[in-house]
Length: 220
Ligand code: PMT
Image (cartoon, rainbow, N blue to C red; front, side, top):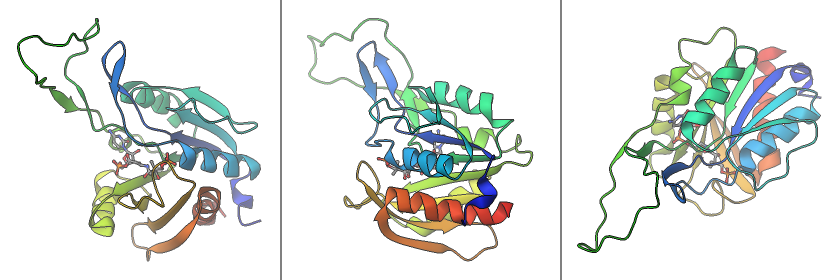
């Protein structure tokens, strides 16, 4: 098949939306279901790759033969990625990672204020997992996603450069028929010094297969 060169390759995949806790019962997250990342895991495993899936969701069944590491926060995801990056041949960051986390974690459930009907939440930037790997790449092929609601290709091109990735898979998340939480996606693949590749609306498993075919060419 077109995925033959992925046989026995170690592929690390992230999936789902990270959660940043405010207190023991509340968190900030996003609409990622994990379906895109799980589709990559299933297709790669079927192609004979050795797949480790770092999952921020527990809602989906683990694909057969895939090792799953469950995480919740950006920090946990970053640790899991770092622990597995060395031995990986390919990293695919399909997870929707929080860009901000609460400055303060409250050990007890935050009480409703009696004085005011407003609560101001202070947030700080999270570490950028992809960027943190920039100087740690040896031979890994690193794939990031770009989730954009405007100026898709320009923003994705910026992320390709800023995050030091070998490939960015850009999706328009302003649309509700593709992207977050649905079964289908439509993407544009960006690579340095290569023409962009457009993949029109398909089931996420087909999208994963087509993206993996482009990656497989690099290993053929
Ligand atoms: O999970 P689904 O419901 O199937 O939806 C799929 C999806 C829309 C979530 C997926 O296709 C997708 O676009 N994932 C990336 C979402 C995202 O975080 O995009 P971003 O443009 O904010 O980040 C760019 C890249 O940097 C991503 O690969 C992200 O994983 C990574 N990142 C972001 C922030 C951060 N602190 N660390 C990171 O590594």
